[in-house]
Each structure stands twice: as C-alpha cells, then as structure tokens.
Image (cartoon, rainbow, N blue to C red; front, side):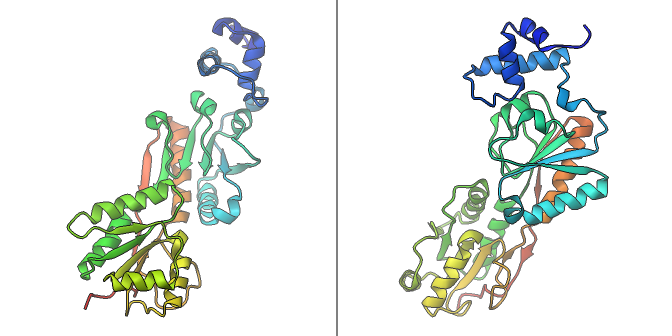
Amino acid sequence: MGRVRQADIARVAGVSQATVSVVLGGNRTGVRLAESTRLRVLETARRLGYADPLVKRPACHDLFGIRAASPAFEAHQPVLAGVEAEAAALGKDLIMFTGPGPAPVRRTRLADGCLFLGEPVPGELLATGFPVVHIGRRTDPGGRVPCVDVDYASASAEVLVRLARAGHRRIRYLREPADTAAARERERGIRTAAAGPDPVVRTDGTGLDASVIRGWLDEGVTALVVEEAVFAAARRALTAAAVTVPGDVSLAVLGRPPAGTAGPEVSGFEVPRRAVGREAVRLLASVVDTGAGEHRLLTCPPVPGETIAPVA
C-alpha cells in the first residue's frame, strides 16, 4: 500500500489521527487513553509496517541502547563495566538514554535493542516487539521480558548450610528494609535452608545497637546472617558491644562487605555484577538476532572467609 501514514493507521484502527499521533509519540502530554485503544493503535501500526522517522536507518544490529536508573554510574558501575566490555568484544556500539521517567519509545528505537537496568520496560515498547533485556528480575505480565540476574536464593541457602554444618542452630537474620526483588530472593533462600526445628529469626536490620547485640547473645544466638545493605550497621553494633567475630558470634554476609572492611575476611559469596553486565549484552544480541529470549541466572561463587567458627 506504499508508504504508511498515520492517517492510514487511524482509518484501520478506527480512531482519530490525533489519537494515533499521541500514541506513537509516547503520550508525553499525558492524554487520557483507554489501554485497549493504545494497544490497538500500536498493533495496527506494527501490522501495517509503519516506519517511525527516528528509525529510518539500516538495521545492522550493531547499536545497543541502555537505560539505567539514575545515578547509573554510582550505583551500577560494575554492571556497566561488564556491559561496556562485552559490547566491545562483540563489536557493538552503545548509546545511553538518560533523563527522568520512562525512556521515550521513539528515542529508544534508535537502537537495535535496549538493556534496562533498574528501570521498568515501557508497555508500549513491549507491544511493538522491540528487542529488550532487563538486568535484574522484574515482575511483568506473562514474564515477557528476558532478563539476567544473580541466583541470590541458592547462594543465600548455601551460606546457611555452612552455618548449620558448623553447629549453629540459633541464628539471627538481618534483612534490609527495602522490599527489592534481590532481597526477596535472598530471604527465600534463607527460609528454604532453614526449614527444621530451629527456625531462623528475621529482623529488619534497623535500630541495631550494643544492647540489642548483647540481648541476642544472652538468648543463645551464635551467628548473624547479614545482608549487604545493613552490614555496616551490624559491624558498628558489634564493635560497640565489644563482641568479637568469630570468637563470640559467627558472622556471614549475603554478598560482600564494603571494600576496605577491617578485620578477618567475612564469610559470604561474590556477587558477579560485572559478569551480569556481560551476560546481558550476550542475551540482547541473541534476542536481536533470533527474536527469542529467556531468563538467565548467574551463580555466586562462595567466599569461605574467616568469620564462621564451629559452635563450642
């Protein structure tokens, strides 16, 4: 039918041309539209082969986009370093989409595919079938978004198994207050490994001080399992209580403590953040080439450390 115009889309979809313009422009002005109307316009545009002016360039599959939650380089530097390294290895160029709010659909489609890090994938982008990969798991209807994440559940369960083998039965689990997907997976691993007559007691990891630590020891607690986000607070409380690790209490972290942490190496596991970035680029390359994606989980290598001691 020749070059498809927005008027053609409006006629086939049974809506006004103004509605088509709003939908294809990402509805930046916040016009109220029924979701069914928006999806109908997008599907009609896709079916008719509408060419967005912003993507009139040869599809050579060599330009990958990345949309990262701000501040990207401060919070996700190891992941982004892995993304950069693997893109270079595969001969891909990178374009970073910045600015507040969801990435505008038309701008994102300047790339051949896009990585999303800490940002949800816009529904209108998913509706077009554009290649995307999410770094980290997110809940999306039908599990349509391929993702790469860390197997926090298995790694956390392995830490608890190590403590159990050392004879620890009364364990306090300090969980980070934020209800993130990673935190939920770590807790799931802890709960799976703790099934038995001596359940692990969870606290939200806030309000720690010397009196709380001494109270736990008086109750017979022999080990603390601490998430990365509350590790520093736990160490300050242990120091204030004059409690030695692992002499008075064993300590394990679900991940790694902050760089430069003094004292013996803390038992836990490595979080392969750089490897996550590299794997995400490989997965996106596969999605761009084949149209098919999957969920990939990376294993966390254990760190034996020196802070888990046998129960006397």
